[in-house]
Amino acid sequence: MRITETADLWYKNAIVYCIDPETFLDSDGDGIGDLNGLAQRVDYLAEIGVTCLWLMPFYPSPRRDNGYDIADMYGVDPRYGNHGDFVELVRIAHDRGLRVIIDLVINHTSDQHPWFRKARASKDNPYRDFYVWRSDTPPDTSEESMFPDSENGIWTHDEKTGEWYLHHFLHTQPDLNTANPQVRDAIAKTMGFWLQLGVDGFRVDAVPFAINQTTFEGHDKNELEEPHDYLRSLRAFLARRSSGNGAAIMLGEVNLPHEEQLTFFGGSDGDQLTMQFDFYTNQKTFLALARQDAAPLIEALNSRPKDIGVEPQYANFLRNHDELTLDLLPEDEQNEVLDTFGPEEEHRFAGRGLRRRLPPMFDGDPRRLKMAYSLLFALPGTPVLFYGEEIGMGENLEVDGREAVRTPMQWTDEKNGGFSSAAPSKLARQVTEGPYGPAHVNAADCRRNKDSLLHHITRLAKRYRESPELGWGDYAVLDQPNPSVLAHHVTWKDRSMVLLHNLGAEPVVVPLTLEEEEPGTQLVDLMSEESCELDQDSSTDSQLDGYGYRWLRIKRADDPRLV
Image 1 (cartoon, rainbow, N blue to C red):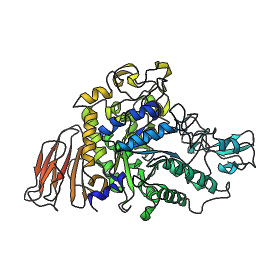
Image 2: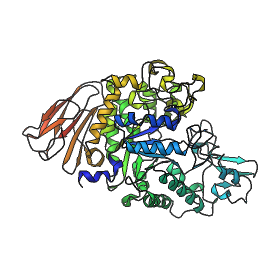
Image 3: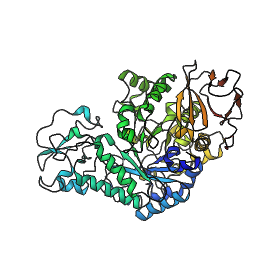
Image 4: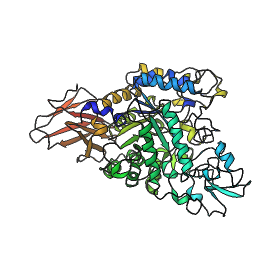
């Protein structure tokens, strides 16, 4: 494959940036972020190096679950604007070279959605079968709820019809019956609508729940013989309907071990999800950071399936819009991470995760933060940033639940952090205060400070974009004697890099041997002015500071890239 062909599978070397429109920028002074405000910051995002915007739900919603309880899948909540504003946002993003993906919620709706209102009207309503019902009293399902702090199970009794309906999340979010062909057609029609308005794909919410047929057994006449056929049909529909700026994608939320994630890619056929978030590597990364020992991260990377084909891709992240979930780790490892990064009860969510952003977890240590983001961009796959990460925003623990990390973006040190001109009491969410508040952390100051995290991430983004081997290449963990160090080698065609990250506070010397390389080969550090050369044994020693990192490009005579 030539370098020019990488644009066809653009997502494999993309930089994804997640935005909650409600808390990004308020353009009309009502205290709520909106699409027009977001459009005003597209140039800021392009300057950082972002290549793909992921918009969290902007649909009409009661917002019991931050907009993931959707009341109209075709709509734009009037608090954020209208369809014209959305189209203008997509247009300006495309003009600046950014693609746009939006949330697609296929597992549930709001209980205020017209479908559910009709479904609960009577047992013989045509929309009854759009959801999952049972007439018998359900068993104890308290262990199955995704919100154990607020729900005591996944079935709720509906007084009007005397039956129970299924909901894996809040009881105000009834699960759709995706075994029903009419539901699947309705979801596909929704995809077609937004594709027609110019989006480049979808972040697909809660995928395993949407095809979990065990909850339908005995309750539904349309049980799918092969649940994954639903994902195949959505992927085929996407391929038929997408046009213009290259392949549209489905980026799936699948919080499962690697072996099970392989099924959601479509196995060797690769005909289901285009991308998946790598939750397992994320959780092992935080265990490694807590221990300052790279072994858990190495174990995770080695457990990734190597036979997923060319098109599928993992998406890497440090923090996202939800809690830092740890449910794929054994209980003792969960406790290690919780005790290290969330020592107080208020730091934790539902007993299984952390409702914190990264800088406070690291006590504001800039060395550790810069190393962690270097690691994010260096891991094989596509990096995903959550808004405000690039400037080092902290959480606001006075905000309830997972929304502690979804506070207004801090643009300046002015009123409300430059997010809105409204009175503070009118804001969609309370601005963070204290050492991570706008007086100390804001985008305007970061832009003027060459040593800021913003400039660091901007540089990482540039280096990542000019190093397609990071998104496309094969990788191998390199042997070396320092437990705190992850050393890995990526190769794609004739391009190779060695990436070193010290998760520990103490400086180390990393001996490297690259037997396949000729003596005298230069390794050029893309993050500094330094370089090193392989000796007669194709070996070299590399010095790493505490929380240090190096991106070493193996220089070849026929490589046209500048170093």
